[in-house]
Image (cartoon, rainbow, N blue to C red; front, side):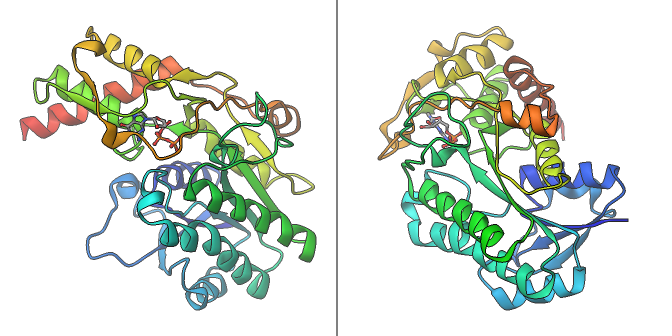
Length: 323
Ligand code: GDP
């Protein structure tokens, strides 16, 4: 039986990855940071199957103790301050967690269990003001937010530990990936949640930022498969994971409102509060390396993804209203 340690287990990706690893027969440990209120929504259904261990990416000693206790075969570093807009409000904290936190986790692995395989959650936000389209593993980075800058550090420190210490460390450059478990502040979930509330008569307006930004949006459940595949190869490497399709925020609105028979133009108001100091205008990933070398496949299309998210939000809100 293999053992995996997942940081960020309570988040969207952590919960899907934990499910996948449990299905594969892994013993799954999740790193948890102390909070006064437990944030267990995404992992409630598997709470009895996983073991939570307490530590913090900012506290190297705690990570060393966790790695010593867990003795993981695989470490998936998914924890981060992951919301781009917040990274302008808390740039230092974002750097501490999203950048230096990666070094702390790598150090704990290097010092205690250097043969463990390490996955770093890198991000298409590193491409930022894109230098070429589509973006691939060799595309130079040009981050456009404190978050993007921190992720570039996390990417390179992972590559550096691989090259310095011969560790099996991989960086997965994942384009935006969404699901019904996505945080409500991210644009897809903000929209599908609002569509459901509007449809059920609980809200009559949706305030949004830049509707012209384009993203390559995939389904998080498909993307965690790629994370696992990266750690099962003979050699560690870095891979872009994407759908190869790009859609504007405006199209996301059309599809989501259209699914419940509404026209987004009747409800959406552009509010400068949601416009960012610097924007990433266009992301479009070329994942041919992952398809070829990992045999990774995409199962859920953009339309299916938005439909799944609207349906889940409708179901959840109906239940909340009924109780
Ligand atoms: P990101 O790509 O990691 O920043 O993911 P987000 O889901 O937060 O944002 C995706 C894109 O949607 C960005 O270009 C945002 O500027 C744009 N966007 C437009 N309106 C909104 C909004 O109201 N909330 C969020 N989160 N993003 C918005």
